[in-house]
Length: 103
Image: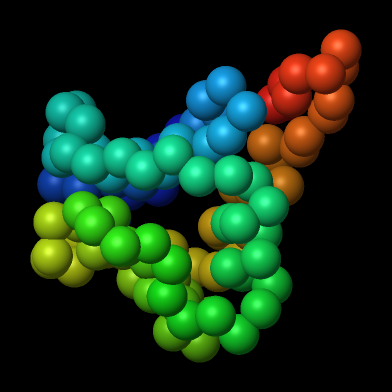
């Protein structure tokens, strides 16, 4: 799965990490900030009227059909809600032997 490129040097990706997901903002090729979060919390964020998720260096703000991504207090880019939802859908969760595997 390729990264979502913003209109500047920043890009965004969601990757499986143990039993969670890692949301990563890259500055060119370097990892700028990341946040580990459960699949269910991210799913709740996109499915409910909640407008803000996370505190700290990486924050997401839902505004209509878009998600504004802030890293270290600055707006770094915007992801469409549909693109974010599709990324989560591709990381379908399957239980296997008590461990979560992402495909």
